[in-house]
Figure 1 (cartoon, rainbow, N blue to C red):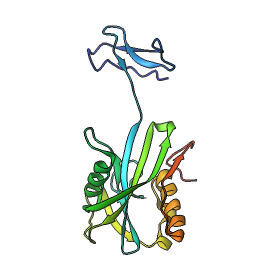
Figure 2: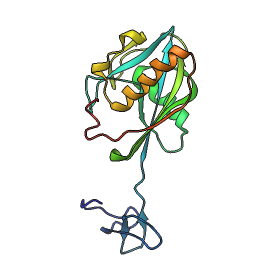
Figure 3: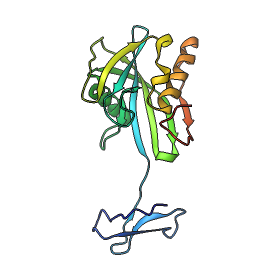
Length: 187
């Protein structure tokens, strides 16, 4: 598991990593109050915004992958649905309001404990702009997607599905798992 020093979120005592009775993997377990801290995957939620036959991408103004293009997405917050999070992240990253459609891409990335959930969305209008999180925001035709400048393998995978599905005019849900040595390096 991990050797990093961790502390119990309930009482503050240092935890030990062991397999609790009835479990099948190591957990951060407090010897003082017996609390088991389940460290579960984080959900990344966002949109693939469409407008007038093009898609909207954001150039990252934050690390990781500063200066690379991405879909508007980020960590889901507590007490919001994945769709609500996707709408919020789109507004935060490009100042755009979207009409969220169906869940389009769900990609598990076990190596970094994340699940990426991307919704197809339609921009209400062509109102978008840079934000503190995005240095540029731009509509791209499918032929002009900057493939070599995409931020993450999950973004590439989602866009590859979208390009292929656009040829058919049918957009089913895609569920994938990415196992990569370096998730920042695109295949």
